[in-house]
Structure formats: structure tokens, C-alpha cells
Image 1 (spheres, helix red, strand yellow):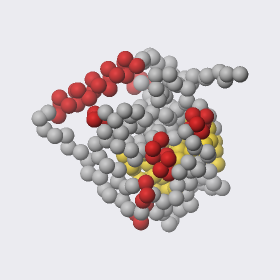
Image 2 (cartoon, rainbow, N blue to C red):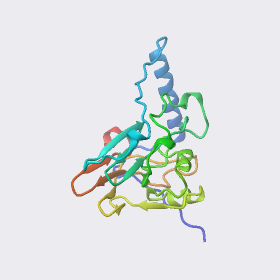
Image 3 (tube, rainbow, N blue to C red):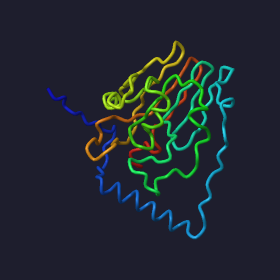
Image 4 (spheres, rainbow, N blue to C red):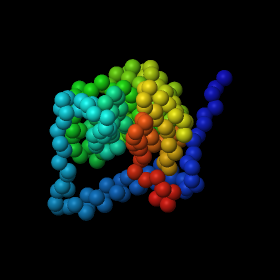
Length: 224
């Protein structure tokens, strides 16, 4: 029996956008950006290089969040190291178009990272979920996703995937839990899988602290 496909929705109503709208937005913004910065070269932020010693977990009771570019973070406590939406590839697209090449290098290499206890994925867009990076981390590394992604990731060879529905709570250690929080967005990896996986933010907490990763840049319905 063929499993019925479930398409996920947003918490607030919004105007739908098709493929043509996305192409128009993406390439229109690229042209505007290029025109705005010609003939001067666009100044890029300086990246602080990090090595394996500087990425070790903190030794006190505080949390540390290290920004790795775009929406990628290394979040660490004394007892755990988590990656959120890690992207170490040069391109965030199925086709390596020059316009979609990353503008700055990552501050470290995958090999410099400490042991990763889990990877939190907010949704399946190419700039948040990079298969190449996940394979570098190892197919046994625990992946935690919103609902609808486990089957697809299993077909890609990942053997330790946990799905969390919105508002669902999952213990990743005796001291730390994560909660999938609602977000206003969509998912797609191709023309045929729009919204077949959900999207979320992540609340990370222990007895003393709470950290929140929104999952995308814009959450309010007025900004969708």
C-alpha cells in the first residue's frame, strides 16, 4: 500500500508562492545586489579562524554558541556539543551556480570540531541541510529533525534520525532537553516535495539556561 503524503502547513495563513516566484525573487535580488555594489567590490566580514583547541566544550556551567556562518551554530555546554544546520559545503544548491557560491570560508573545518553529540536540523532547504556535511560528520551521528524528514534521510544512508513534532520535547541527555518550536516557512528540495517535511526552531534547555534557534530569519506572519 502506498503511504499517503502529508503536506505540512504554517501556523498563520499566508499567500502561496510558486517556483516562478522563487526564481524571480532569487535572481532579481542577485541582480539588484550586483548593481548596487558596482563598480566597488562588496566588503565581506572578516572570519575568525578557529582550531580544534578553541572548539572544545566550556569547562564551567555556562553555555557557548559559536556562529559558523548563515544559520549554522556549534552550541556547547560542559557535557554536550550540538550542531545546528551545519553547512561546510561551497554551494548551497543542487547545481553549483557561481551566484550561489559561499562568499566567505567557514571559520573551521569539520575535522576541527569536537565529538558531536547530535545535529539539530530546522528544515530541508539546501542552505540549512547539506548532505555532504552530514556525511562528513558520519552516518551514525544522531540527527534530530522536525516531522517528515526521517524517511528521506534514511534513504540517504543516515541510520540515527529522530523526528520531533512541533511542541514535542526530546531528552538528549539526563540534564538537557530540546523542544521543536513552530516557525513560519516552507520546505522543498525539488519541484516535487514541497512541504512534505515540516520546519521548526529549537529550544535547548537545562535546569539553569534556555537557548533558542529560530530556524529561519523571519517568523512573523507580516514578514512572510
